[in-house]
Length: 440
Image (cartoon, rainbow, N blue to C red; front, side):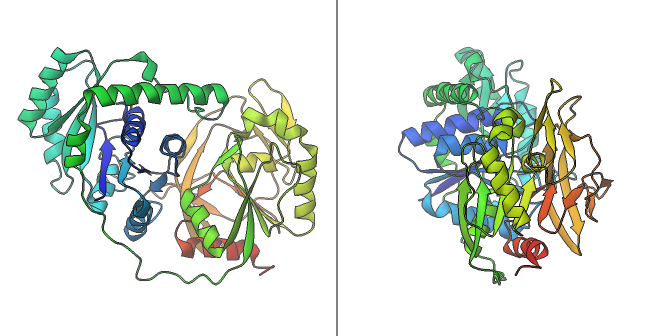
């Protein structure tokens, strides 16, 4: 029998991610196969999930895709798992507009019980009205249990446990305060030292969870089945037999797994490393996903064999797609915080810089050639040299406000800060046909 549940919190910074990772590790130690998921468009948390669970973590996002697609992704990935663990995003009811697209809506669509993680560091019985409110605000969202985080000890937990009982929410246990569980850096997992620190924090969390959280009780309140879901209007892919070279290494390490799945339906996905390889694979299209090329700018700039191979591929009519970190790689140079410039591919004349960096993030819809694509923008760098190769496109936020997020395009290349979600087959097919129309 399969089990599944969603980990949420009243707000950000309650400890959802480290508790989720600790649960994955603790349940794997008991011999369960875990399938992780992440609500929303985030890609850093899923990278951590995947490392700890041993398999890709899938985004469940009701703004970037429709409910049928989300249900189908969940059902399909659960076929080979014992337990599905979905990590929420922000607060339980925080969505693009009110609770639209929120973790609560994902829980409702998938009929998943919700386990709240509550930061109890500076509270005790006052969590009773908090829990009562979250449990009763929307009866269609089943808040079943709570795990208290940052608890000072057993006596503190007794106050919290009584509060949960009076609110009608099952207390599953607690995680004590422990500085070793901190996950501070948003670059975690991208260098050896930081990756070791993350895994050490997860080990601590898993051990504390095994000691202080009733995992049997958690599984007993979890959903016991997964609804079979296959889209009745599944698109038949007219493209086939293509080969896709996808950049994948420490510098380029994020691409929505559902996008990769659709590419595999169309043809063959061949991974390669712009950091370490000297040649590119034989393919029809090169895909450079997001990541942190600025952390490896010098190494990328000095891999001349790779740079020349990619330039030759483009000159001979090969097609390229670049998202965010990939977009930085396709420009003239990347400028680091210290002002140093590192030459990149030069397929476009823009320069990206981390000097005076500012965070730019949010949901985006992109209107281009009578097509609308949805995705997400998240980056600290900016374009400092204007580029003549901007495509005719309109980017909007989730609230339909126009925003500056240019697409750079030539006959062979598509490049943008946009993390595009193409897990729905019709969207991927429309995107590839737009790019490959002069070739296929």
